[in-house]
Amino acid sequence: MKIVLIGFMATGKSSVAPVVAGRLGLDVIEMDDLIVEKSNAESIMEIFETDGEAAFRELERAVGKDLQHRDNVVISTGGGVVMDKTIMGYLADGGVLIELSAPFETLIKRISPDIPRPLFADVEQAKALYKLRRPLYSKYAAIHISTDDKSIDDVAQEIVKQVQNL
Ligand code: S3P
Image 1: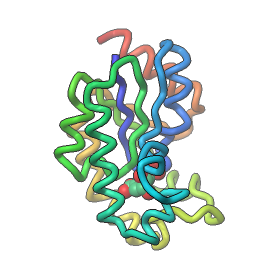
Image 2: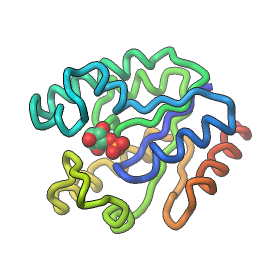
Image 3: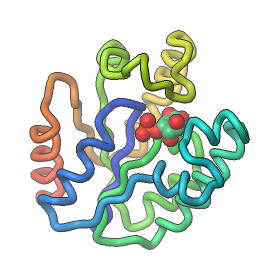
Image 4: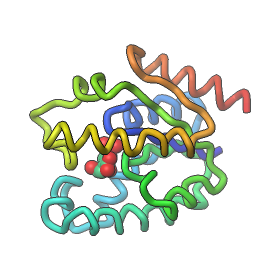
């Protein structure tokens, strides 16, 4: 089984993925980690600052391709994958796409201002991105789960239940 978590930044993908993987006996992959490994940088922020978003997206696409035929895995994606049809093709190949969602106000509260994130420096810009992408997460995913007011464990349990019913 290949489970792919999609959703906007701070919807809980990275926190929930290892718990789901543990429950189902699957590997866990954080796409952002593989992107950093493929780059010459130390962090996602550094890739954005040094080489720009286009370079980041190119690496993201290469990582997506590497994951096309991965199995027995839970993949935590970056929030921007839905903007690229090619990446979504790789992720959807043999995969179950699961959308994690929460209202924008919740996401803002979850994001620490002390840890800078690309694309989140300006709240209005982030909100515009959220509005643009929200319908895409819904469109691509077969399963939709709200993470608002829920613990990581609650969300993981919901995912396990849903995929076992497939
Ligand atoms: C991005 C989301 C980030 C990371 C990069 C770009 C986006 O991942 O891939 O900063 O475009 O929404 P998370 O969704 O895991 O924060």
